[in-house]
Image (cartoon, rainbow, N blue to C red):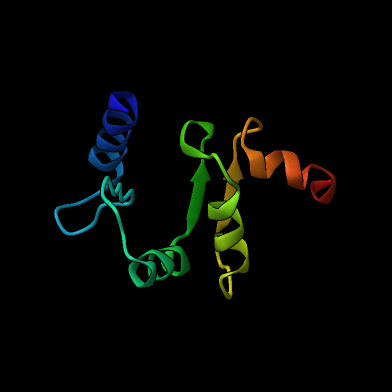
Amino acid sequence: EQQVIELVSRLNSGYGTLGYQPVQLYQQHLDAIDYRALLGAADLCLVMPERDSTPSVAFDYGLGGPVHGQLVLSEFTAAAQMLEEAAW
């Protein structure tokens, strides 16, 4: 978790401004409305295996409405294993 926090900090320091942070990291529970709103506004959805016990985040991002961003899955996530054939 600390490595992710440090990476986000470096990216925001290098590419952000006082009024804009390109990477938003939320370390709290979000209700369903806020969760879906953030997925809908995201330019990128990165899913890592540490907390990916189900593929719901990847599917919520892809099926939650018009997607204008990219979905990046670690090969070790449940969603990547389920979508392996669809990607090729």
